[in-house]
Length: 468
Image 1 (cartoon, helix red, strand yellow):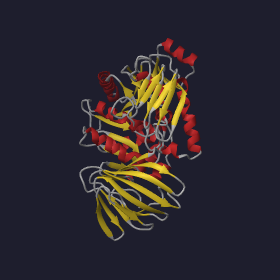
Image 2 (cartoon, helix red, strand yellow; image 1 turned 180 degrees about the horizontal axis):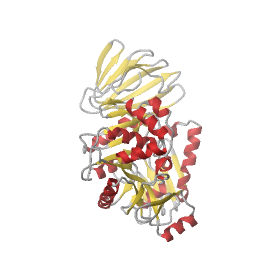
Image 3 (tube, rainbow, N blue to C red; image 1 turned 45 degrees about the horizontal axis):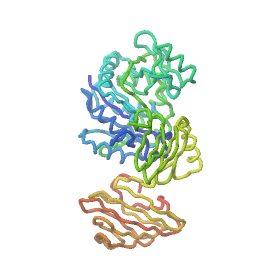
Image 4 (cartoon, helix red, strand yellow; image 1 turned 60 degrees about the vertical axis):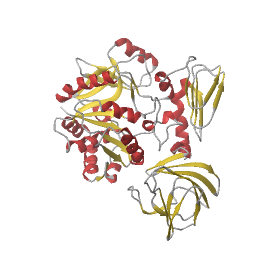
């Protein structure tokens, strides 16, 4: 029985701000090693027997970062990125993935639905649990993985077990007293958000319980378009699709739900405090990363991304520094980070949306300085990559090459620039930047003008499928 891994890689992980941002979300971060959470998930499924090439459901804005991370692993000659033009929670994402897979997989295929941003410490136990789920899915059951609880946790939902493998009920996040009762009862498991679904049973049950979601996603798939490894759901149909979680839309209603007990070192890393639980600690119980200097500090998480962070006399404290934001809080209030993120979003501050470094399909740019009428950026262009042909209505640009070689279209002229050479792009001039070399191209860009926003770009030609 073949397994079709489906990795759900949407969302932003707002409780891990300021490291996680809307354009650089939790699943793409390296939190517990050199690989991102998405990459560790992909490495895990590569060890499953009978696994088909993975399907990854991802937001349109994260497609190139995701593609880069998949291909950097070198594990999958074939894979598909299903692109969501907008988020509609897990039920539409899972329905769309099932409809897409149904036309391409053997009829008896089991869809293994996994969030991209969970940590699983014991891979062998994970593979064993998947092996126990397969025959249940082969009996037309909708299988969920319930994590054997190690403590009375108030941050997770629970699954109440019934007779045999049956699910009695799904329970919302409890208070402390009720969580302790669940642990004492012995019939409650943490809800992991991981599933094994037989394709046809899943679609039949979705049609029965949420036909409006199935109707919209059928249109989104039939009207979708393929572009290399990308498959784009049709946007209008997805806009019309109700936003519901798979638990609410299906699992709480179906009589086909069963649960597999799982104990494989699972953690959803849903907060900074959750990261402390799984990260390596020093002799004083501290978790540190980056350029950090401590004096009499105990049981803290101190993370530096951009500059030296020095701490004295702290206890049970969270400090996370990035180039444009610093978070300081008691560790036991790390769940409240989402309140700060909500305020940033409401105020439309850039620190909610992106970092100083922004990744593009051709490379990246880092904002070094920004003022009212000018800003300075460091631009990195990958070997053999090039930007779109474009112009700006409100700004002039000065480019200075500091590493590599740049091929520049500047109006009617095409020139090569080497280290310590420069050019000037007047306002309204069509231009293009390309790296013809085999090492990364780095240049300093100075923008001057009345408006310096990224939306002042008129594209004439773009090889990455972006809007023109």
